Image 1: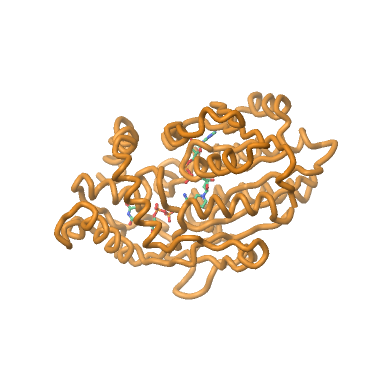
Image 2: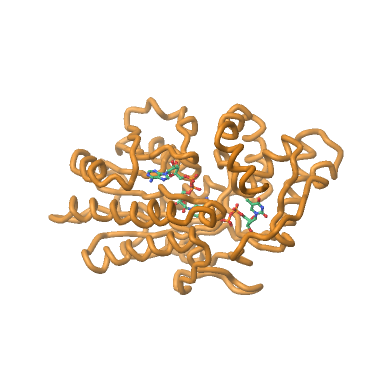
Length: 354
Ligand code: NAD
Ligand code: TYD
């Protein structure tokens, strides 16, 4: 266990991205006695606008940098002497991983190993009070059929270049634990949704398309199932696992909230019609079934009973509440959406959806 009353110097990687920005905000605000360093390369998915409200906090520092940069990572580990690392930086979108697998191997695998080396070197004299926390995904477990849940002991069986790269990075974290005694925790979470989500993933993409009256491209027959968790509930789980989780253990995090894509999209359409004062059925007419994603995993579902029993965590909002908060955020932050969908996004969209 890591006690939170102590002063700590933490490195959070990928803090300008979707989940990372919620984690950085939570730690900066909840732990004024800590200093939080946010390292992010600011790829297309990273955006400092996500952290505008906390950028002047005295316990927060942003470092622009790449987790693949060996000299920089070694330098900042020695300069700041981190006690803890919460590692979120990654290439995170399955469709992009099908288009460009090597980028995923570089950032997700090599980048993680670079951070592990730096932590191992810094903590070689003592690992007391230190912890490397790897944020991972339920996609490492592959796909479920109609029944069953992923538990912490489910065998890894990844199907996409994204999930294979995350599985590999999880294995490296465990290997550093076994071989070098590096204290680590890993959590594998289901699909997140909420404010600041880049509009390439299902929910923000479809909110944006409805606002722009564009087609809603549903892959295959839309019968694929995902478990959805509100991002702020994930950030709370990360806080708990970081402070109270046991070293060398894995925690599965999920929303107890399975939806077939088509049902989720219909609910989203209905809620958007209400918010935009359009007659019911308007947005649903935008649904367009398109060619399936190669290697598309049928179903993900998480058994989150370990984190619930051991750390007392459970989601705080229902899906309908979380979705409403998410829609309201996008409607109130259209400038954010306009900024991230200008430039390169247009080329990405054309390439992916022809
Ligand atoms: P994201 O794509 O929104 O953000 C990734 C962040 O990492 C961005 O800020 C980007 O600039 C940064 N980054 C990328 N490559 C980098 C590099 N080489 N060096 C430094 N920074 C780099 O991702 P997200 O959805 O917030 O996911 C964060 C983490 O959580 C990832 O590790 C992902 O695998 C994991 N995860 C995501 C979900 C989900 O539903 N989004 C679910 C479970 C686990
Ligand atoms: P996504 O948000 O990309 O997350 P993941 O692939 O990591 O689960 O996709 C969620 C589900 O929605 C998945 O089954 C694929 C599907 N999907 C579509 O049908 N159309 C789309 O345009 C996108 C991006 C996803």
